[in-house]
Image (cartoon, rainbow, N blue to C red; front, top):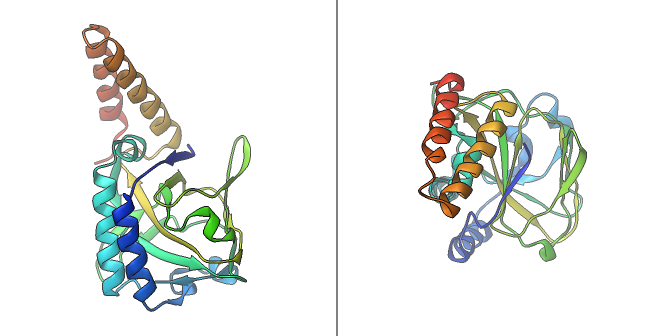
Length: 226
């Protein structure tokens, strides 16, 4: 499932992010690259253990918790602490596959990367290039979203990020371990949840709502890994 989730951050939160990012120190993005990715990765990141990364990560996590579309689509069990990167002219990240398991730095905790997420922090007119390219069964999709919007996609897909040719592409990125490992099962649950919500809005007294809600939760009970 490739899903756009609009307006994860408010305008005030975006402004706060940008102020903190402009004042922060950056490091070579290869510090979080795997053996294969380090050969094709050229960008910059906020250090994982910096105060700016911790503060902004908490802001992003709070925004995710109040975003029903994210919760319904990802069914998150664990979320890797959000990281932050920027692409300047000449930077790019070639075709790569994200590591299947990520260790949370400085802790014993691990996150299985079922889903990848990119939260855009710069408006499309602030930079040229910088598109994220995600492939699914319908081909390659070039993604460049408004600031505050998020793209969610399976972490198993090979993904390149085109280089910026003007300005700075700034984003937060992270991974999610879902309660439901299989992407097809998650998609089915998401579609069912959307249908239930539409029916509840148009016909709240329909007795089928209870039956459909029961089907949803019984499927979640069958497929969830807790």
